[in-house]
Image (tube, rainbow, N blue to C red):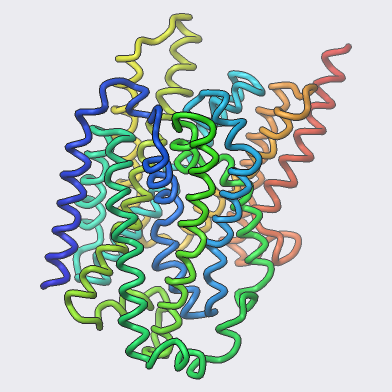
Length: 466
């Protein structure tokens, strides 16, 4: 009961914090985020990368493989560092609030529209996975009906995001980040004492649990590749960087985000390893962290459970916001201006941003209820991540290859997506990748993006000369 009261109380505080922020959302730029200082940039950006996978997911890897499960957040940190070192200044200087807007700046408006549609699909997919994580946690920790957990908690996050925009996301994420780190560190201290300290943990587990390669080099390389490419086109993670008040803030914030994100998985992997020591025969490794927490003292367990909910909420709200930003700025505006050739009023953009955030966020909630038990949901999420990588490859062509035709870029985006979808569909049916086992959809879409862009552009160039 104490644990439940703490979690519900935390959620109510989060909801009220988000609602109070609505007074500062007076125009579309405030809704999307504009002139953000370093604190809000870091809190929103870090929150997007530290969701359910960084907590329960990495602890599951820790239970099965050991400390190498931390590569998930380390890979994300590496990707964010690449963004900070090479692209944060460039992207911020373009003064567009979306990745699709940056693509449009270098390649063209049709590419902007198509990439926005692809990125919205990516965000809805990732948002759906976060909502499923909410339902799973509600069921695992408190025995709630998972669909009720998804609907109640998901709608709560959606309401304050729609009303308060980036300000609400920023203020609530400050709260989330404090609770996340404090809760996980507290859990590590208390639970490690139950196994006699870290030194006893070392003697209790096989040596492979302390190897950074035990999870497998192919998986690590795939994570790093996807993170490096995805960090530069992740709308939810990039939006606060694009909204930074100046280029210096954008760069510094990116490095600080990496410093917050990268070590987090080490803590959660260690919790999975402690759970392995205390509960070595769990049938489902996904229950490693929930099982550990349910057997801590009610007060400590409640605080740590709140930190896990905080991790999911800190990711869900930026994703909902990014969906509305992409739709209002790059889909609706593109279609409306093409039809009427009139520039939209700021009040119209704000209205569309709020409505589309509500509808697309509501879509995430509805889809998660329908697909909560679907075994292919993770495959779809990985496919969505791979799409970000292929968009970044095509964007690089747009930045550095002046001969790139917009038509070729658009066809390459669509073709890469079709191939990636076919790749994960094949895996879900035959339980292995086409060609050879480790050639995942990440590598497939990247290779197809490069080859198709070059070949199609050559054909378009040839046709334009004739």
